[in-house]
Amino acid sequence: MYFVNEAVKDLLRLYRRVWALSHAMSVMGWDLETYMPVEGVEERSVAHAELSLMTQELLLRREFLEALERASKQESLNDYERGVVRVLEREVRIARVLPPRLVEELARVTQEGRVAWKVAREKNDFEIFRPYLEKIVDLTREKANYLGFREHPYDALLDIYEEGMTTRDVETMFTYLEPRIRRVLDRVLSEGKYSVDHPLEKEKYLREEAEKLNLAVLETFGFPIGKRARLDVSAHPFTINMGLKDVRITTRYEGYDFKRTLFSVIHEFGHALYELQIDEGLKYTPVGSGVSLGIHESQSRFWENVIGRSRAFVNAFIDLIRLVSPARDRDPEDIYVYFNTVKPSLIRVDADEVTYNLHIILRFKLEKLMITGEVKVAELPELWDHEMESLLGIKPKNYSEGVLQDIHWSMGSIGYFPTYTLGTLLSSQIAYYMDRDLGGLYAHVVNKDFQRIKDYLREKIHRWGSIYPPKELLLKSFGETYNPEYFVGYLESKFSN
Ligand code: MG
Image (tube, rainbow, N blue to C red; front, side, top):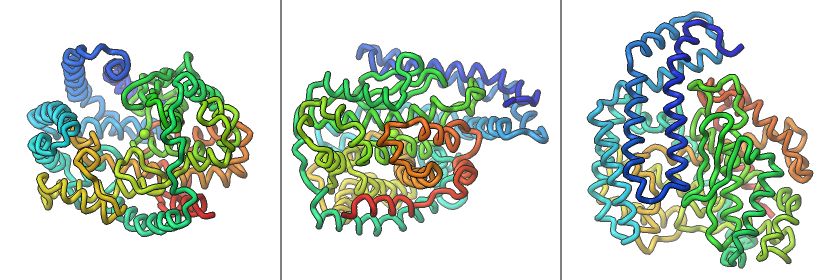
């Protein structure tokens, strides 16, 4: 039995209504990004804001707070029950300490800011976005102060996305990574094998062919389309879960460079599998979904990079890959190089495995300086270009490929970027342990035998949902928390000749 304590059972009974609201909001969010007619957006935003308010009201109702307090005072709760109390205490604390005025202002300025950011990016004019970003940074600083922190205001923001992660953790991680990534990058660039403009990156493909490949890969991985999952099309690929038995992913078909759609599908599959393999006993509870953004991203990166960009994958799927016309006559090694080209580039989302984290280092540096006020928003564009040049040796020609490229700041998501790196690091850490425990990871990939890989991920990560905080889960499953050494080892061995 998962939940036996009467006080916790009472709490979960009350929570079910909150769960139902979040279920509804997920369906609405999915619909908004996929099939909703464009002009539906205004009413949808209002409906969404009202449901968010209802959620907050439910969490702060006296009955709910009393039930939570009663549950938290119980002795000898099991791990599942303790997880429920921990997660709800976090949610209630956030709902409680932030004044409604601040929440309301942030919601409004980010909604307007998103529109301004889009226009600014299209017109390549930072000034259009600047006043909004200034307001967003001010409000976010205020938010950090309300949430509280021990050492650095940025700690409070990181913790929203990655429970327990601190600015110091991230600094330690990047101080270790930066020189080592540069070393690998320098070697890759001087050797030339991977630092090429591959012809397939420009070549057009037929959507039906790419779709066929995507679906075939998903089927081989065992993605339960129609039963518990869907694949649809949206402007930006994403994963969303309505519950344990309804998890949906999307991709996009740009019409050229087919690896883009293929890897977006494999990436989102990794996110979706996490949700699909959560223990059914956690249904309708606050612990029935992935525990943090970093752990979530470790799952998507594991499938995208460790599996999808491997020689074993290319060899196993070469016949399917060749269904896409531009790949028809290409040999596996050529496809492997195409999947793994490495080049300093300006756009984060297009970056390769070697340079990707340098893009995150830049954003982390700037966000910290913004939050402490050491750098003014007006100074960002210049600082961005300067940092880009020192990290990757290239300089944006305009704001759109520089400071205006990401949507995150316009949404108020400051403190989010480091979770991308964290996920990447963890993906190779998990790969190391899986390889050791399964007696060779790629032997299974070559045989298209993904069951043992999925079972391993279920046991170590997925089934637990959010019952343990991220660091505790890692300790319990692997005997250590985040460790960047595995990622460096992975890069070094992958990109050495
Ligand atoms: Mg992702």
